[in-house]
Image 1 (cartoon, rainbow, N blue to C red):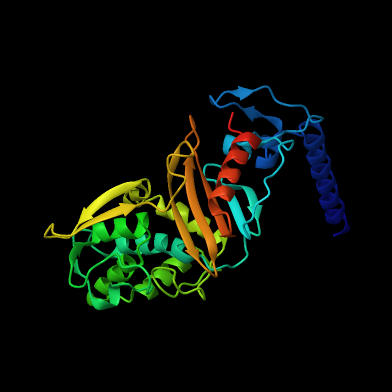
Image 2: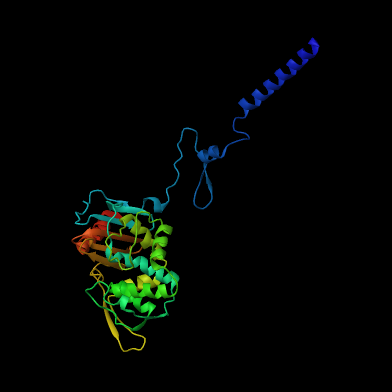
Length: 323
């Protein structure tokens, strides 16, 4: 019995020695982890494997262009704004290039109508004919843009709502949706939740209720989503148009509330908003010349919304480089 134990011990010792020999003689063979491979070889964009780095060299992963462009020149002084909250957002790199109180909740007035437009296009037929009810005439008790019993298409109400910021048009669209069985306000708030606008709440389709609120950050999410709808931004690029009632008897001359159209180069479109409590609000989308990129400017709670927006766009063009 004792002899058998000696034999087994001897065999075990031999196996240990053999194993140790292979480990120290061939340290890189077999069982190499994916991390080791990544740290010792580099593949260029054409797929060729470049010479391996030795163990004393650090491997730096290539940075994709969108992660660092545009680049900031910190010597360019940031603008002073009257706005309570403001952001500039670069869509290609998904980065905020400027921010001031981006998560502060504020009333946004008629910027609400951008969400209303999205919900309309997702749920209503643009060719539907809407008969204007008394609930959709002079809804703000100040300005009347529609006439009782007028028949007008959804797509033309959209133009009135987005270009001249017609409150009557926003309510007429809501009334039409209600007649089709939709709770329009529920649809608006559900869409906001779906877009991750977690600091936003909406109480009416026009933005007249200042108890509603959003943030600059949340509005960036809405603007990015709205780019899916060419109809919206085609409308928001218009300065002056005329739309007619279905019978052609009523002509509505529509003039944009966006004073920066034709002033700032490469403007895609924009939306304004104002109440005495909310003050001046502004969304503006601007293409970056020569680049497949777009910046979004948002200003909230400003006594100088157009000046603030102009300052932001001018600054970002001086402070950032896309090359």
